[in-house]
Every structure is written in C-alpha cells, then in structure tokens.
Length: 249
Length: 65
Image (tube, rainbow over all chains, first blue to last red; front, side, top):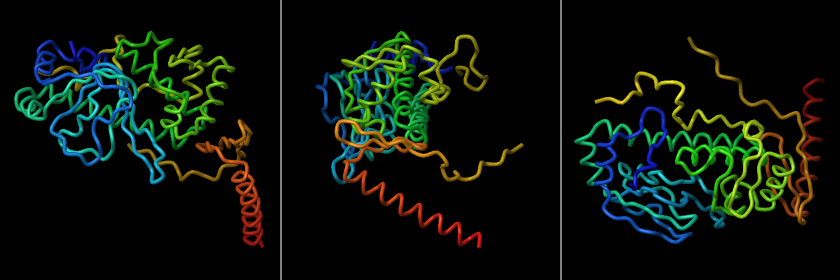
C-alpha cells in the first residue's frame, strides 16, 4: 500500500486498517518524479498535499545570492506538505532530492476525512506536529552544535527516521544525498563537510560514501551529535503509550 | 512547580580552532561556529578579532578603574 510507511512505528498513532484504507482511497494520483525537480513553489496556491512514497524530498529556502538552506528533509512515508492543507500555500519551495514516487491527496479529500474520521484527523495533525518537532531539532543543531556535531546529529536522526520507515537496519542505510546536500542541511560548506566526514570515519563513528551511511559506533555518534531521539516519537514496544495517546474510537 | 529559565548564554571562554583545508580556512567552534573562509577573509577576520579583543580588554580595564 502507498501509505504503509505513514506514521509507521510512531508512538500510539499507527493507523488501523480502516484509517489506512480511507487514506489510500483519498489518493487521487501517483507519479514518479526525477531527482532535483521542484514540486511546489513558495507562494503557489495549493489544493493538494503530497505523500512521499519512495525517495527523498526537501523543503528549502534560497538567500539573496542564491545560496540554499535545506530546512527539512522528507523520507518515505512523510506527508511532505500536509501543512499546506490549512495554509493553502507554502513559504518555501519543495523539491525532490532523488528520484521519487509521490501520491497526491486533494484537499477536498482531507476535508472529508476531517468531517468523517476525527481520530484519523488527529493522526494527520500528529504528523504535522512531528514535522514541527523535527524543525526544532534542526534549529538546535544549527544554533548549538559545531560542524562535526551537526553532521553527526543529522546522520543519527536520519537513521532513526529511516529505521522507523523500515529502510535502515539501524547500522546502515542508503542516503541518496551528496556531501553538498549535507552541507546545505547543516549550514556548512562542502569543504567543511568533507573534512567532517573524514573525521567521523577516522574516529570510527560512521562512514558516508557513495550515498550510503554506515554507522560504526551508534552510541558515540549520538553523543557527538547530542542526539536524543525522543523528539521523533518512535514507538517503544517495551512501554505502552501514555493514556492520552492510546487510540480512541 | 516551575523551574527558572537559564540565564542568557555567557561569553565563550574556549577559543575556536582554525585549520586550513583545500586552500580555505575552516573555523570550528566555539559553540555553533562553523565557517569556511578564503585566506584573505580569514586573515582580515583574524586582524579584526585581535583589534576587537584589544578594545574589549581596554573596556574591562576602564570598568575596573
């Protein structure tokens, strides 16, 4: 199913069969998009939202000199621009980083879900709030961490997110990004990222080559990046969700 | 029960570390500083930092007297 990875393994909000079927039915079209294509531009009127099925997408802003800051990375299972549902336009561009498969959900379908299925609506809201939590972590990363810490934090976060989507075994994952992309994510130059990647490898923390990340020492990498996955709200099978996050009827 | 918010960030007491790589200068730390500069920009920044440090020391001396 196209929505299989949406909110997979998220604390107390995994979709039940009926909700998943409703969300599948809300999809109007699917398409494949080449890498490095713009899906939505800032200011453009939107009457649909995009669920990322395969590939990597980004949200980004360019400064007056055309230099880019990636402000979010989206991975399979993410609703890339669900916040465009109430906002109706974005304040940033959205594009593909790798070849991607996307599913389009018209806003009229989200209107119907909102009216018919309050619990599913709450889960869609959760997904948007999860994006906000990730944004806060990115602010922390850029504001408080040095170059090595920023890259370490990004690799740790991406590993957990991909693991949640079933696309990392926790030790290695495919990341179809370049060092230049990582530079735009971490607010660094490519030379700086290159040096940081070398340092991480030499310190035995992780490697990043040919679009693959291998984590050699997860605990040490997390410590170096001051990474605590709590903000990703991943299900912990060992502990039940708090009462107010248990599925409601 | 409330906890006090921490005070604003104090001035950094650790020095940043500058290194050369591929013909550019990388400045790492303190805190979130991570900058790549051309040699000319790095030299100018260094001179500016030294001059500003001199002025700041003079301000501290004036405050103590």
